[in-house]
Image (cartoon, rainbow, N blue to C red; front, side):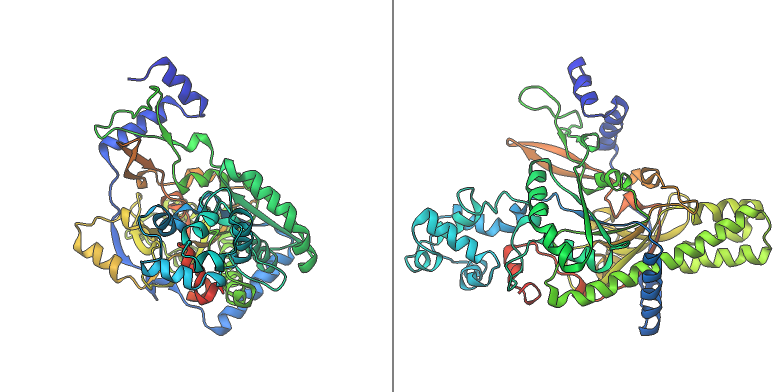
Length: 505
């Protein structure tokens, strides 16, 4: 099936022949759905700390930062903004010249409220000889949109979200990249330094670097810190082969194999390369202006405080296990910690001999740990927090996407639709063991949680394979804890008109 040229192409990406064979087999077999116990809720997998507890955890985080640990803010930022402008591309390419849909009318009625208004006005003046207001008065709405989306103007149709102007300030508008620099200074700086890592696409890397060089010094001065900003791209070795509908390899017109990016799950490799004690993960478009940052900062400190408090306890137990001198009562205390605090239960745990129990406890205590902020469900898309059965028969907390749930199972679908919370990609992770050694994160991926979708290329249908998602199956075998955070900490921008929401004005 694979020629010498194919094998050369595969090797050139850093992929093995065996990996390709496995992926082609996954197209044939599909992936199993997960077995669910329940949707997580307050008191059943989701903690909701009260005022006094919140203060205690924030103090714990500030004390941890004072120890000089290395903290990194990890921002997946490779997405192009083209989907944000889907409606405006439709208008530009459509038959009508004036706004007709509610979306189009809202955009033009509020155009002066966008942070990019002045830049767009200047682009229109340069290219059309007229500003936005005059073009609209003449009914030339398409010229305005063309100057926003196309290369002759702002080129927003091709730029990444992280480099668009999102928010207005007296001193000038800001991009999401800049808002993340500010956030890094406010809750993730230690030793007077904020480490921020952006995963970017290859074609946008230089643009990101230029923006950082342009803006970093001003924010460093403002917050009295130094910035260490780094970038990485998805590795070619995480691309996956595409298949025809009959599960044979899909080939390009020139006969070569087609490989596609493996989805955000590929970023577990990028995360694995980060040298840090604690890593915050948050999407590029989930930012707010400074006037609304207080809640974000408070709750980031809170979930980080929960993380380092749980980690300190787990480390203490592991050191006790290392001594070999512990009582049965101490083992019982560890079981309670794993089951109650780390929300990982094993039905037959009472049947284990002490020696087996120690092996089990060591495995569950000595692994990466994450605390995930979850918000009340308001119908936004996002992963749901569930209690799920794992490969080893334990039940623990996982973030699941709808694609991982058997739609024909009424009970599971009810759990998914009636779930009270969802995770908006708000994570803080501990990625080193109790001896200070980094975990090898790919070892903790559940490879059975990939996803197959239908796509097309040049009018030909194909099947695409996504790797286990970064915060789904890629972190399946981590200790996972959910903490309720307010909806004010979640303000994603999925369409250009989302920038007109009060939270982005």
